[in-house]
Length: 488
Ligand SMILES: Nc1ncnc2c1ncn2[C@@H]1O[C@H](COP(=O)(O)OP(=O)(O)OP(=O)(O)O)[C@@H](O)[C@H]1O
Image 1 (cartoon, rainbow, N blue to C red):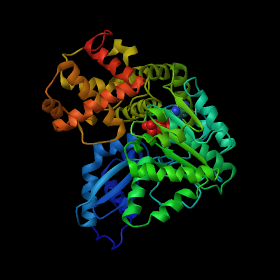
Image 2: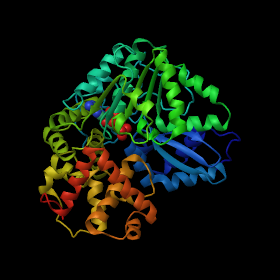
Image 3: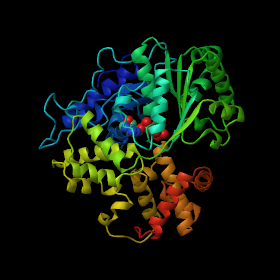
Image 4: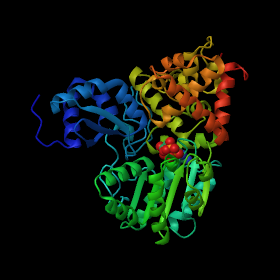
C-alpha cells in the first residue's frame, strides 16, 4: 500500500480506505452500503465515519468493520480505531439496492434507490448558514422538510406548532419544546423549521446541535481556555435547534452555560427549539430555572403513529424514494411495526436488502420472511413456534419488540436505540426469572454486575417517570409471560 501523506484529513483517509476495499467487494454492495459514507473526524487514534442512517452504520459495523479498520491501520501505519456513526446527512432513507427482477418503479426519471449518490439538492435548496461553530457538526438534513412529513393524529399539534414557528420565528412559541419517544419525528420537524426558514431567508444563522455535542463543545472550549469564543458562537445565532435536551440532566456545568445561552438568545428575540424524550418537568436532575424556561413557550408531544398514519408514511416514503410497494406489503409492514417511524423505515430497508440479497421480488410473503424478527403482537399468528423462556429468549423478544437485533443487545455498542432495550431486557430477566446479576451480565456480552444493577434501576426510574415507557415494558413482560397469549 502506498505510504500515507504526511497530513491526512478524515475525508482523505476514508476515501483511500474505500478506494482500497472497493475492488475486493461486489460493486452493488459497495454502492448500497459504503458509497454514501464519509470521514468526519480524525484524531491520533480514531477515525470517525458517518453513514447515512443507523441501519447503514450497523450494517457496516456488522459486515465490513474488520477489513475497513485493517486498511485504515495499514494506511496510517499505526493503530486507528474506526467508529461508524449514524449521521443526519441528506442521503436517501432507503439504501441503494438493486433487485432482480427490479422493484417496480413509477414511470418517469430513474428511481432514486438505484442511484447510490445522495440526491443533489435542488438549486437554491436551503443550507445551514455560516458560520457554524465547527465543521464536524451535522448540517440540517435536506430531506427533513415539511412536505416530507406526514401529519396524522399523533403529531397534528406538533406539526401545526412547527409550521407556526417556521412562519413567524420568535413570535408565537418561544421556545418550542417537542417531546416524545424515539424515532417519532422530533428531529425531522425541528430540521423542517430550519429548512423552511433558510428557504425564505438564506442568510439566517441556524445552528442545529445535539445536547451531546453541546456538552463536548463546552468541555473542549473550557479545556482550551476558549469559553468566550464558545459563548459568542452560540449567542450570535438566529435560530438554535437543540436535540435531546434530556441529556442535560445532572450536568450542572452544561445547564449553567445553557441557561445563559438561552437567556441571551431569548432576550435578543431569537427562536429556540428543543427536543426531548419527555416533558421538561419530568427531566429529573434538570434545574428548576431551566424547567421553567423550557415551559415558557409551547410544550407539545408526538405520539406513536396509528395504523392509518403508518400506512400514509410508508406510501409517502416509498413515493419519495421512487419505490413502488404493493398495498398488501405496505399493510403488512404497517401492522407489524407499530412503535416508531424509524422502525417502519428500518423494516423497508431490511426488506429491500433481503430482496436484493436473495434476488426475489418484493411480495407480502417475502416481507413476512424478511421481517419475521420485527413482527409485532398483532400479527402473532405468524410467529415462529414458541420456546422455553430463558434469558436469551427474553433478550431476543425484547430486541424484536424494540425493533433492533438481538446481537446488538449483546454488543458493546452504546447507542440510544440499543441501550434502552438492553436495559429493559436485563430488567425483565431479573423480574421474570430472577437470574443472578452476574449471569445476566453474561448474556449481554460479559457486562459486570454493577452495570446490570444500574440498568435495572434505570428502567425502574423511567417506568415511574414515563407512563408510555412503563406500558411498553409491561407489554413486553405480558408477551413473555403469556398474559396476553404471548410468545412463551
Ligand atoms: N410523520 C412523519 N412523516 C415522515 N417521516 C417521518 C415522520 N415521523 C418520523 N419520520 C421519519 O422517521 C425517522 C426518525 O425520525 P426522527 O429522527 O425525527 O425521530 P426523533 O423523534 O427525533 O427520534 P430520536 O429521539 O431517536 O432522535 C426519520 O427518518 C424521519 O424522517
